[in-house]
Image (tube, rainbow, N blue to C red; front, side, top):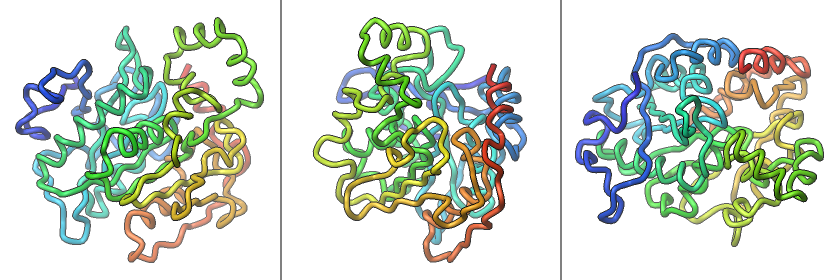
Length: 317
C-alpha cells in the first residue's frame, strides 16, 4: 500500500511542517513495484486496483544523481490519475537514462478513490513538500519537473507562486492547460451558470473547474506572466488535443519559453491528449528537453488521428 513521506525520501520531514504549522495534506508516495507499460489504457487498467503501484526506476531509495544528470526528475500526473497510470512508460525510460526519478500521488479525493481531484493550490503545496523530501534525500540543489495535463498546472503553480523557482531548474509541460480548455464550447456554457460549475466541482473535483479557460485560478496563475525568471520552460503540445482546446492554450506566451507542437516536427504523429505520455516521439522530446546536449532526434512514428482515445476512455470507466 502507499505511504506518506517515508524516511528514505524525506529524512527530516517527519513532522511535515510548513512555517511551524502542520500541513493539511501530505503527498502519497507510490511504493509497490509494478511493470513498465507501453500504452496508457493498460497502465490505467493495472492501476485500477493498485493505486500505489510504482513502475521500474521510480522512487528508488538511495538514488544518487550522476554528474551528467545532477537534477532529480519529479513526474506529476494528471486529473483522476495516479503516478503509475500516467508514468509507467516514461519513468522506466528516464531511470534507464540515468535520472533519479520520482513521483507522487497528489490531490486525493475525499473518498480516497482517486487523485488529481483537489484544489490545485493545495496539490501544489503537496508537491512543494515532496520536492523538499527529494532534495533532502538526494542532496541535489535543484530538480526538474515534468507535469502532464493538470500536473503541468500543479508544477507551474508551485514553481511560479509558491517560490519553487529557487528549487526548479527545468519545467516541462505535456499537454499543459496553460490557458485552460473550452472542451469544444462546453466550458464557457458551464461557467456561465454558477450552479453548473458547482455541480461539476462536486462530482469531478474542484481542479477540473480550475482548468477551464478563463477560470479565476488560471487568471491568478498567469497574472504578470506565465513564467518566472531562473527556470527553463518547455511546453509540449499536440494540435489534435481532445482536451485542451484550442491547442494553442497549451503554449506559453512569455518570451524565452520553448513551445513544441509535435506536428511541427512530425506531421504524421497525430498523438492525442490521452496517449501523450506513452508516445515515443513525445518521450524523445522530453529527453531532449532535459538534456539538449544529447542531440536526441524524435522518431516521428506515424500515429493515426484518434489513436488510443477510445481504449483509454473504456479503461477509465
